[in-house]
Image 1 (tube, one colour):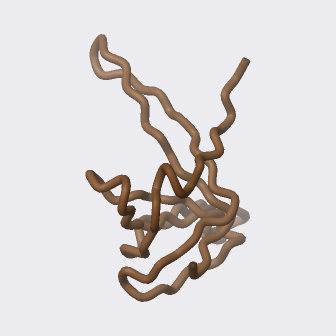
Image 2 (tube, helix red, strand yellow):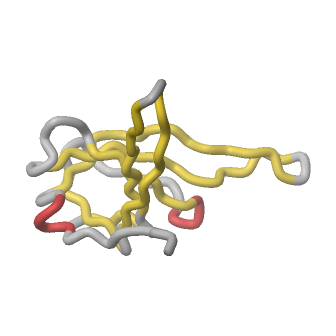
Image 3 (tube, one colour):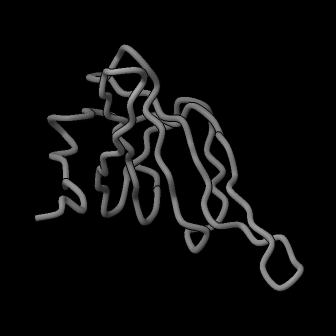
Length: 104
């Protein structure tokens, strides 16, 4: 059985989320034109305090403009897992996806 994604309990997992800034934009050339596939945004979490939380939004969500540390809410958030190895050790990278990001 393949694990496609996990739907987190947003309040228990991340608590309050605040906008921390824009990240990378993934683009690809399609039919000779550069097309945006997804955008990454950095968020602050009052529960996940060790690192910023990075969320990936599809291009359909459009570009987001929020003030720094403005409270936000993710729409249809889900977490995927990506495995990789370094030498003989295995690691997992957890990736947060959402359909949209709105003001809380």
